Each structure stands twice: as C-alpha cells, then as structure tokens.
Length: 265
Length: 275
Image (tube, rainbow over all chains, first blue to last red; front, side):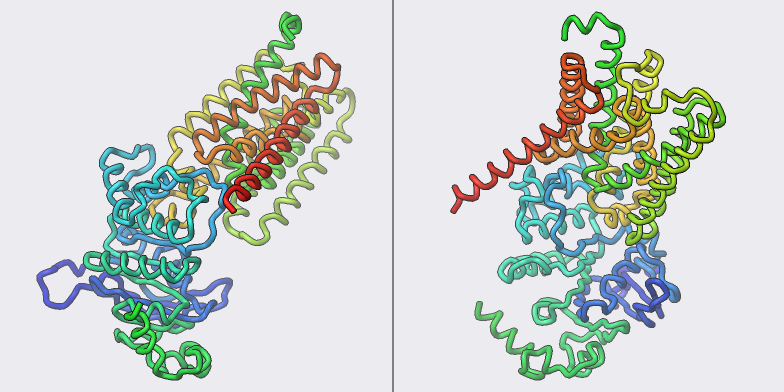
C-alpha cells in the first residue's frame, strides 16, 4: 500500500491499469491507464457514448472491468470506494420524490452507519457542516423537487462530502446548470480541491479546461498526459474529427481566448 | 352505520379495513415512489396461480397464493434488477401465465368452488377473526422491517447507485421490498379482491404523495386515507347494498381525482399569481 505521506511525490489515490470494460459484450473502454495523484483536479472530456460514465462506474465498483485492475487508495475497488464521494449526473430527478435537502445530504453518512444502526448526533453535525459549506443549510427542509438545477447539484455535492471522502468523482456536474451557477460551483470545487482530490467528467470542454488542473480526453481510449492544455492531436484522436468543428471554427486558439473571456467576467 | 356495528361481520370488516390500510399505506408508498405499480400488479395476478393450485391439490388457497406471490415477486424482482429494459415485458408474461395457471387449475378441480369469486372481488364482509390476527401479525412484521431498514429503503428508492457505493446491500433490500409487496398483496386480496388490490395499494399513497414531500409523513397520511376510504366504502356498501370492494375503490378513486384536480387548479392559480 502506498501509505507514507512524507515522501516528495504525491501519493497515488487511484490507479487504473490496462482496464477494459464492456456492456453486452460491446467494448466501451479499451486499455485505460490512469494514475490519479493526491490533490489532483482532473477533468476528462469526451463525446457522448465515449465511455465516460462507464469509467466512473468501474471506479465506483458498479461495473466490473473485463480485464485490468483498478486500485483505490491502494485497495480493491470494493474496499476503496469508502474513500470516494460520488456526485451523479445533474439530471432532472423525480420531482415528486418525497425527500428534503437534509435527508438527501444525510445519505452521505450511509457508508459510516451499517445496517440496523441509526444516524448519530455526529452525523447530524457533519451533514449540517457540509450543507453550510455549499450554502444550502438554510434550505434544509425544502423538498428536493423544488430546487433549481444548481441548488440540487450543491446538495449532491454536500451528500458526497458528508461521506468525508478523500476523492470526489463528479459525473457531468454542470449538465443542467446555467453558466453563472456553474462558475460558482467551479469555485466551490476549487476550494474543496485544497484538501480533496477531484476527478470529473464532462462533455463541456471549454468550461472544464479553464478550471481543472489537468485534462484528458476519453473516447473508448484515454488520452491523458497530465497536462493542462488539450492538444489538437488529443482531440482529434478522441473525437475522430477535425478540431475546427468542435472549437467553433477558431482552431487551436479557442482555450486561451475563453480564458480571457472568463477573466473579464 | 352505528346499528351496523352490532353485527360481528361488520366489526370484523372495519377492523380488516384498518389493518389492510396500515400495510397499504407503508408498502404503497414504496410502490408509488419506486414506480413499481406494474410489478405489484404482476405479483397480484401471479398469486392467482397459487389459489388455483390450492384448490386443485386441496390445500389452503391462501397458502398457495402466498407461495406463488413470493416466488413471482422474487422472480420479477431479480428480472427487474438484472435486465432493466425488458423487465416490463417479462413481468407482463408472468402476470398472464400466473392468471392462466390459476384458471386452468380451477377448471380441473371437481366439485365446490363457489368461493372462488371472493378472491377476485374480495370478501371483506366475510373476514373471519383468525384472518384478522394474521393481518395484524403481517402489519407488525411490515412496520418492524420498515423501521429497522428505513434509511436503506429510502436510499435504495432515491438513488440506487449512491446506495450501492455506500455499501448498502441493494439487491437484498430490494428483494425484501418485493417480498413485503407480495405478502401485502395476498393480505389485501381477502379484502378488496385480486382485481382491486392495485387500486388500494396505490391510490392512498399516490394522494398522500401529492400532498406531502416527506416519506415518513407520506406513509402516515396514506394509512389515514386508507382507513378513511375503507370505512366510507363499507358504509356506502351497507347503506346502498352495493359490493363493498367496489365502493371502497370508487371512494378512493373519487378522492384521487378530486385531489388531482384541486392540486392542478392551485398550481395554476399560483403560477398566475407569480406572473
């Protein structure tokens, strides 16, 4: 196990080696290799159907890879998933589901309390703290169906944080959120990144690349070299089409320009 | 109504209505929020196969119904878990086969089978005291299980993937839920009959869900509504001399429609007030 924190190099929190995964015998992931270090903030982008959600499922232990090995905090996925806080895709939930903000966030404590155990006062304290940290404590009694997309996303982040995770996995966190709100959620993630490793996937490459530390492309295969910039070569390999199409007709320069725009705001 | 209470069968009927309402309110809430009304219908109709089997082999049809509904619940539950897309087709197939098996077995059975209609339309007015005790026991089991596993049941219903990642035994919890549905269905079959089981399982919980956004309170309100509907239905049935199962369902259905209309009118009024 990679335990010592005294060493110079950041320790590896997730290690994915030669992982293949498939749905109904149809390969979705091919030979994925990824090493996530402590306090990384990695954004993975890729086209829909490129295996982004499948990769998260493999990391969470919801889907077993057909080949290869995944280690989380040096342990098997089953044992390691206790360190992972998971924020699902921000899809429209069942509006009528009878649950309020507090009880959703409280689910983050499920892993700490086994069967037949009740939530404790300590759990309540942690849930209250995490809801406060995402500025949702005032709405604790609000039914989840009455929240806006951004508010709901904050609650899901709070739920993941209530687990006191070492790693945060986010699946398309900005999918149903308007740009201003997503900027504030990125700010929140940057704060969290001071103590938590973050791995997020998205199809929105412009937004993702200006906020994360490193970026990669996923389309069946993973193109990740630990760099901040997406190279045209990576995109072309990942998307299998010329970059101009994706970059609004401003080839190669699109990311720096967007950064400038973001800074002006 | 007061004069009706001097008859034991009427007291038993009211009691049965209340006991059934407790199970319906709790289990119905899970059925409604998990959107497994169709699966519950499948379980109810597959149970009919067990009744036919009971008649044919001369054992208690209720026992047959319990066995068949539990087996079909676990079967459908597993199918529902493993193959998401085609689950409704397979449930439909099991629904039909169970029903057909029941009818064939009953056809093959010689002699007296007049009691059969009571399983289709219920016989709340002929519930013996011994059945009341069984219902009470089942209610206690359901209340205990739901209390003990409340946080897991809520988590699995709300977000299965998150529950699984949190180490909740999702499959076991789900199969426990469908088994509870199966037992509730058999119990209700005695009161409102196979055909109307689904109505009583879903309507009180659905009305409650329109009014309340908290699972525990939703269950409590669903129980209260269930008691209200069965009692009113029984009273109508007694005073107008109509089939009790049908009056109970119509009272529930009327309440459901009224709630829906009032709620959509309120929503429209709210929207207009905002704009």
